[in-house]
Length: 136
Image (spheres, helix red, strand yellow):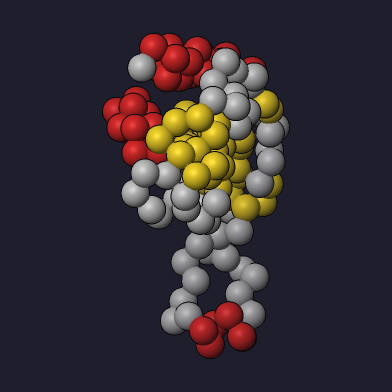
């Protein structure tokens, strides 16, 4: 994980407006959100794993699934996940009993080394993020 400090850190936005501004740029709301915090993820590449720019946010008014929620943006960071080539080999009998099958592989490295080329791309994406969010 490599943090990329930004002028948008600590800024507060209405979550709906933030979504409207970031989705056209290629960001999606990450699947790891809960009612108080979440991330916008931009997939940079999927060569040798997945490289993302992740923009965290936390609710400061309301919950993430409610209308009118206000969120504070955290420090954007680069993240690289490297996954196994095959299906998950760590499924135990209890897990197997709860699900019919587990098709997802566990990451072999959920915080893998990030190539310099992705750092440059991440920094450019953060500058674009600043341009869009600060001028809106």
